[in-house]
Image (cartoon, rainbow, N blue to C red; front, side, top):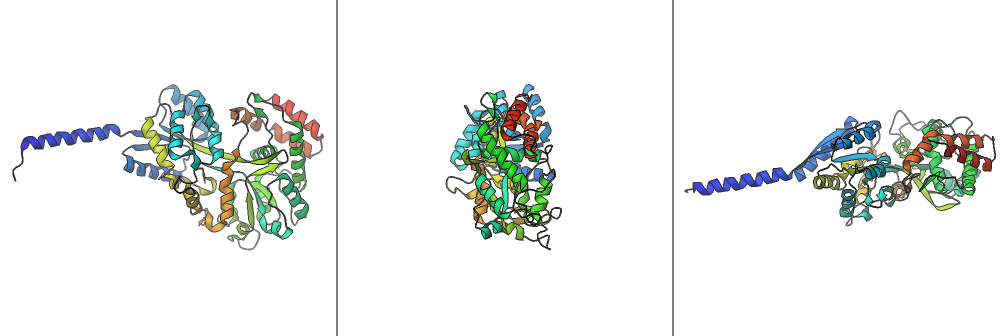
Length: 450
């Protein structure tokens, strides 16, 4: 067969043009992540490689220490050298959007492309602004009331979903030292007490900040908070208590209720040798997990809808990004690549996106199959019943934090970090002043926080 040389040259030129067009359309994206441990980086690099194979856009995964993230992002913005996408905690979402670091139009388009109805409402609400959404929520966790469901059932008690139900359970089950009704955080210089108290205040609709910044605590509702917290503290062992004692006493079978993060879920099932249940003679037993119930949304008398204290992480497209390619990467991460993200640490990465329009529970179902544990591994779905899995994930629907809705998260964080609320609550527990005087003293102290 005779080949026309001119035709061959033309075909070669056309191929070269096509290849150059593909090359021109492919971007190299820079992705900052605070998940910098080697095994976590490996999963993110695998997701990036899979995305590159599917899209033609390569992704450089760059670990950034979380404590350095704020200063690095500010410096990169000033230099016009931001990465394309940043995986970041809640506290940066709205401030970075306001400062111009994040592209809210891009995040909003991604959420709309994926269908906002497939995301947990609470996680979306925390990143909502007048312009849309600051960032795309990825994963998160909520504080939980962990309780002995078997003991509740034996006593005919309702789950501890409210102040009233908790107090009824304390009344029925408190029998020290065999069983403490609760183990409340009382060590004022521990961040654990700050988180627990914020959860309890949120449950009753009380916040020290509003749209204009610091505000007085509502006296009547705060008195309800104080009296509730004093009651659970009086049902706790004496001393300065924090996460260690609450976990130890629950694991030994000597506590009916504690408040803890979901990072306890694998430990409850005997999967971590450094924190074994001691409720029986087998430190690898899952008996305690089987006897445990979980409550995420918790309500006080002045806030019957309740609240869950949530910690959410986001993917932000920056103002310096190759926008279309960065959006494509984020959409991939929240769809085909979502398993790699959730599998990094399933016990602390609840799926913020539950599924797709066609399969609304796809990612929640997937999450329940992912292994948790350190020294031994097992899927959460093998350890806990489906209704508990639904309760754990469902907390993100109503997740809240002080100041987020009002754009005052930074101010709220200063109040929390000052630990003045911890101190005055502890002084009330110890009988140093009555409830009304404690509210007044807290308002004065909070107003002085800088």
